[in-house]
Image 1: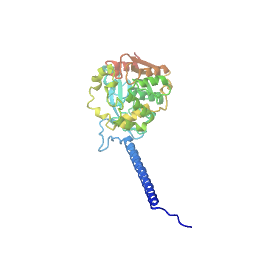
Image 2: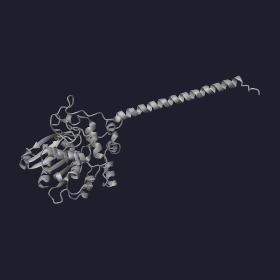
Image 3: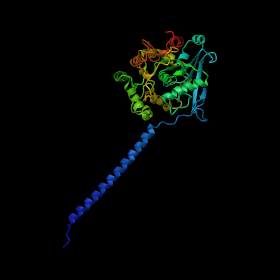
Image 4: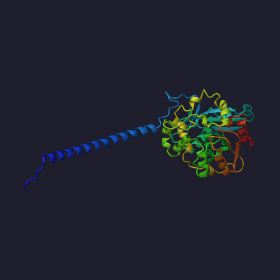
Length: 374
């Protein structure tokens, strides 16, 4: 059988096609490798960007110096505290104060703005502590709602405050008081929540009410809280990236201040220069960002399911809120206390978030809690 003849032109065409196919396969393979390298690099960058740096250690030879009294907790962490008022051995009333977001133990407003005469006359002792990751208290990478209450209980026990004591919390610290009412009600003589932060995702909050209040927050704050709730592992990156604005309160934006808040700025900032640097000295993640994740995450209980800790009126629980608070929607606060009729609610007309710094307010808060006076 005779072999088929191939013309020179056909041979050249076949060679060009083979070379062309080889080139296409080579370029396609290179492109895939480049994309893989790029994607791997992007993932590595994203991981490093989302990963918070380790906190700066307190008390280590080359770390942050310890300047305050501290106790050692059950899990080996240290809790730093500061005492105010009369000596606890002579005190008639003993109070544990819980500071708010972006704050420290030195800013115990009911101790620093109350009348010294009132504290002396009533025999009030107040201890304020740095919450985990703030100031000189060690971070708690396993922090939960329950652990916050147990830290307070252990602090009270190590300081010898007795079988029962009072708790008062301001702002995010007020949110912590809900955990005390849930987990250690048997240790409480009374409780006060001052402008306590509300978690918009508490199950028993009506969706329409919560959505309306949430929509009134600044857009950047809405996104920050969504990240803290739905994507907590991304909280550090979100609050440190420069593409979009992050939480207004972290940036100390005046936009979140009401008319009264602006008037109270001189009182709020007085004497803070010496200790202001302690607030975030361990790093923003273990203080501010973990606060957001715990406070706005999914709670293991709903405050509106808490039972009255004082069914025989042997103590009382109080919530204080300003009707012009731009950080804590008063509409949600009103609903919460309506569901818990055993709470005594005090709403201040024209007051913002910083109302405890106004003249006479801390005295009123203490008298109401300790003496039952309105």
